[in-house]
Structure formats: C-alpha cells, structure tokens
Length: 163
Image (cartoon, rainbow, N blue to C red; front, top):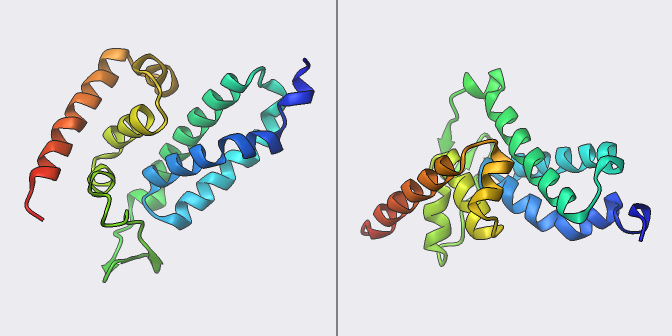
C-alpha cells in the first residue's frame, strides 16, 4: 500500500471537507469568511500533500492549518482595527452565520469566545481527545481541560437564560 494510491488532495477533500468547513464556520461565524478559510486550507494542502504520511496525519494537519488560518485572520491589522456595523442581522454586507433556532446548543456555542468555541468544537463535534486537542493547538492538556470546563459553565449559563 503506497501513499500515492491512497493520499491525494482529491481524496482528502472527499474525506475531510465537512470537518474543515464546520471548524472554519465555527471560528469565522459567517459563511463568506468560512468559505475563504476553507479554500485557503485546501490550497495549502495541495502544496503539502506529499509531506503527509497517513490519513491520521492528513486530518491532524488540516485541523492545525484551519486553526492557524483562523488565528491569522483575526490577527490581521484590518480585523483588529475595524468596527463591524450590524444592521438587521447583516454583517459587513453579508449574512452573519446563525445556527437554526431549533439548535439552541449550537447557538450557545457560537456565542462563546473563540478559544472556548475551538475547544468545544474539536472535543464534541470532531470527537478529538483532550490530548489530541492539546497537540493540535499547542497547549497543555490542563489548559484544554480548563477551557472545556469554563466553556461548559458558560454554556450552562447561556442555556439557562430565559429566551
């Protein structure tokens, strides 16, 4: 079984596109930015596919690159120095991402600060272990556990609030 037979950019898109898009959308909170992030991640994959040795490596690489690209987006000078104007559910002229109303937990997760939203997404939606999240985000396991604990507390408060 050779790498070329199984690991290709096309196969990686087929296998992990949904995961990358969910992660991008959870971080960016609007579809246009998530689409841009998704595209950037897979363009980078095409350039680096030969370095990836297994499907587990591909998955870990995609998660890490998605996280890094999202952080880069928020670190850009433009995003630090622009006040977004919201007008009747619109953000910068585009629809802001809002989970369907029948999903109150998803809506509550989308309201968490980015570091907590990331930990919750990777743990519950992508089913990564605390150790895997720590490895992917470059944090200590204790930090990830604390983020998950704090996120659960925030979610409890958000979900207990009267609608």
